[in-house]
Image 1 (cartoon, rainbow, N blue to C red):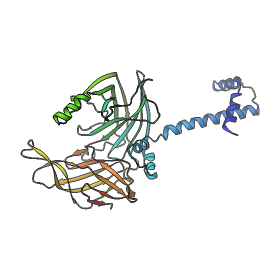
Image 2 (image 1 turned 135 degrees about the vertical axis):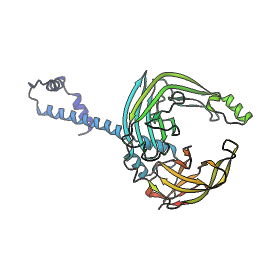
Image 3 (image 1 turned 180 degrees about the vertical axis):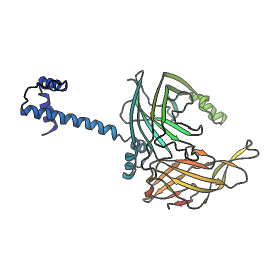
Length: 377
């Protein structure tokens, strides 16, 4: 029997059948004898209801938000093994709060034990357009934010000021202008000893504060860029307007299931390479410049969503940053995954962001910026 047949029979159900069910729920067991057809009909209704509920539950737990995120960031489609990793490790949270018509859902989280990502869904009142506005030349003119001031949208006990937190809106794919995903990427400063922010017993707090519209003075930006030729901070050319004074707060813990299996140390001995570094001269507060210098790489730990590179400078004057751009994980099938330098830099180590998930068993080697190859051990 087809679904339409069941729907038609359900449409023929009389109200007294429903009243009988309500009486039974209330403990009033003096129900009339039900015919076989009625029993079948009630059973069909239950089966269909369970099917529909099952579809709802399946949707809630197989949303694939991180598959959508990484697919949008890459021109080439994700492999089956990459999708499997994301599906197996996506942590569905489904916490919802509403303030003055703005609904925020803490949807999903994922971590490889070194880097963490969180996705929230934002639904604004009907008629609100959450998409950013760009000029004809591609200049960003206006965008919304939900992180008031310079506060960080995510914290945990003993978090460091040096932790790198980034966040951005992205299309959630439902075709509506008043809904967007709000993505938070968190890179804790690697700690010493037993400090592990991604331990399941560590409670993280996500706090979104206010709805803010940030508008760029495009003419002033052009004047500073063209005439003065200097970098300008957002505060120099942007103005902010608070659209809604409200806050949304959630708590959760990251879950690490396959992080150890998806992590691998590549080096057994230091490897020499060359890279662009910032160097200070004099007492450390004097002039500095950007130079090419030899670097000793002492460790490369490859994870599913990131790579941590530990290194030592060899020059006479101290360097304080290694610009670790143009690093790639080269897979056995020849495809490449960019490892981005997203300013997760500290003294002696950088944590690079994988442009798409890395299945470690499928990696052939890591290629550094100067062409040095680090083979998988």
